[in-house]
Length: 105
Image (cartoon, rainbow, N blue to C red; front, side):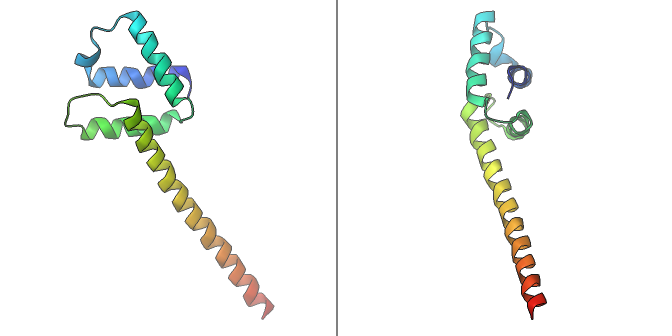
């Protein structure tokens, strides 16, 4: 994820939770961007943004998400997507193998 993507994520969080960020100094904001960027650099912005909106829509605490909440959700999403892809790849491979076996008979 690019630094500009992190800024957009944080703007969304600040818009959804304005009370949590109203007293931030410019230095605090820059530090926050730096930390979030370091933690999110290996994640896609679309995936983190999707997880952020899921969090905001279901949040009952009134508190913004921690970085780890979003990355854990993104990791779960990646694993479930990977498992589905792996399932289909295996199914296609089995189907091709079965067809080859039928052609030999």
